[in-house]
Structure formats: structure tokens, C-alpha cells
Length: 116
Image 1: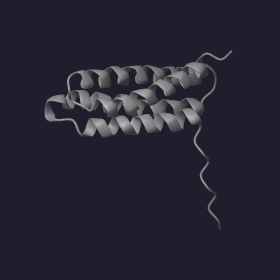
Image 2: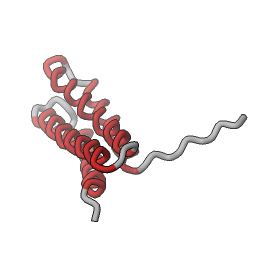
Image 3: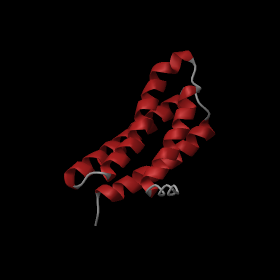
Image 4: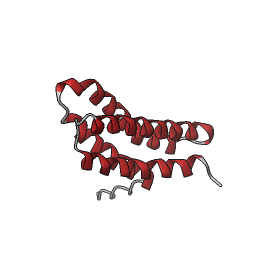
């Protein structure tokens, strides 16, 4: 029996996973005084692709709810990363890459929750 190749992820989920992975890499490298914020970064980052995926498996208002939660988590993650950059806890250029990815994810989620 042949295994079927995995289906490609929807663009919003794929981009959300990339952004989340980048944020997680930054979080795990944080020093002890920043561990509480690192935990919040981890939760917010994980929430984004998880809620995108869950929304894709739902319909109607339930679908929109999960996509809105993902959008809110992306905004939360942006604040945490910006705070960590401003505090000198993470590399500005590494954070900028993740923040740019988050901006793309938020744009996708905005279009998904505000169809024409």
C-alpha cells in the first residue's frame, strides 16, 4: 500500500506556523529574568496556527471566532516581541523577521474574517 503525500497546508496556516516557530526560537533563548514573558510568547505563538487550523475545520460564526482569536494572539505576540526587543532581551533583526511574518498572518486573517 502506498502512502499518500500530505496535502499542502492552507497559506494562512503555513505562514502562521513559520511565524510561531520563529517566535518560539526567540523565546527559548531568553534568560531567566524574562522567563515569564517567554512563557507568554510560547502560548501566544502556539495559539495562532492552532486557532487557524481549528477555524478551518469549523463553519459559520464558529470559524470566524477561531480566526479572530488567532488574530488577537498575533497582536499579543507582537507586543511581547516588541517589549523584549526594547528591553534588549532579543535580537532586533531576528524579531523583525518574525514581526514581518506576523504582519502577513494578520493581513490574511483580516481578509478571512472580513470577506467582501
